Length: 247
Image 1 (cartoon, helix red, strand yellow):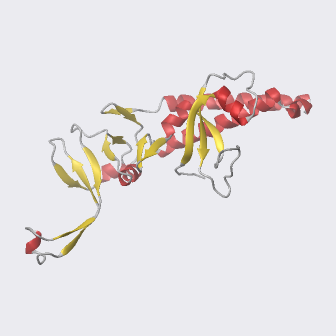
Image 2 (image 1 turned 30 degrees about the horizontal axis):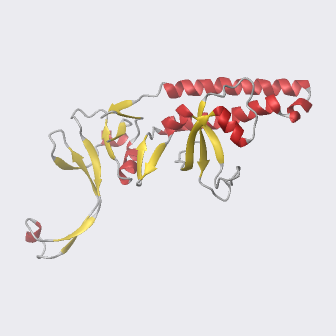
Image 3 (image 1 turned 90 degrees about the vertical axis):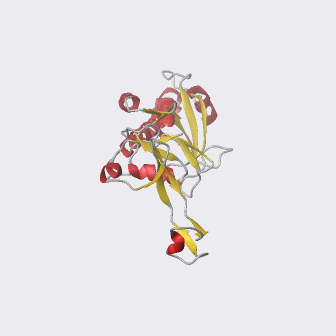
């Protein structure tokens, strides 16, 4: 089974791991580094995604700093700013974030729970082995995330994305470009639909003067020489996975 989706966060706050577990009311596992930087994230509340921390309206969990900053984009003014990532990259980042939160919870349970101490020695060993395996798998995921390509454009770094994600970014008001384009500072932007009255050639040779014309939304290309042209994707553009958001 394969999955794809976009998560919207209600809030995110950078803090240390020690601060996060203190807020959640847990004890920091003995072998964990309390100075590690993490984001405490709050999801939008839903019927099945209920609050789990007093003072918050959505479900609260934790994401490692690197995973969060690679996977999430800040939304302001309706425009996404930051990294989208290819679908397989997003899946890796999401998996790492979810595994990290579970690994911390299990570590805290092993280190400080009376329930753990009440278990027989064989079950305690199995849970410790599970915790070690989770940490090893998390290390593997983090290595993959660190190796993901980053592309520079006008002093910004964004993870490459596919054309479908580029179109979604255009709809939110962003400008996008392919890293493989040779022209300097070329980019696409979305021209919204509008209406206007015919008052000049060549339209007044086709429609009566004053006719209201609907101008459909379309993509324009800012070219290397500074001119603007309407644009439609080629097959290569539609299949490419080197699209980035630009300033």
